[in-house]
Length: 85
Image (cartoon, rainbow, N blue to C red; front, side):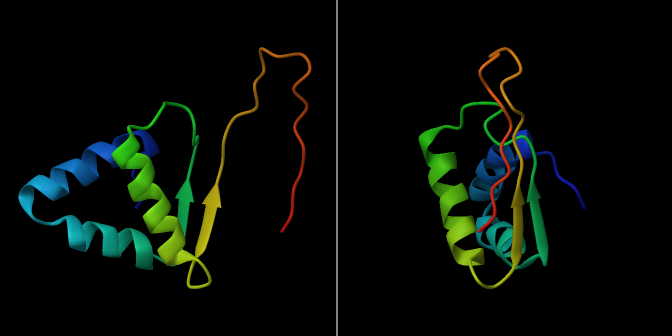
């Protein structure tokens, strides 16, 4: 299953409205590998950013999470860097 990142705040809002938020968050927290692609492509509403942080913090040391974002190709001073932790 590869839900689109941009649609996740909407899916979480829908899950909150229909009473399935807890199950939806549990799925995102417990899936063995969560890939969040193009993070930062759109500005998240404050509540969505808080929910994303909650999911990432609950996954910490329990499951793998990969975050990706695109480099700023319009800025000639922007050079992609590799980082490891």
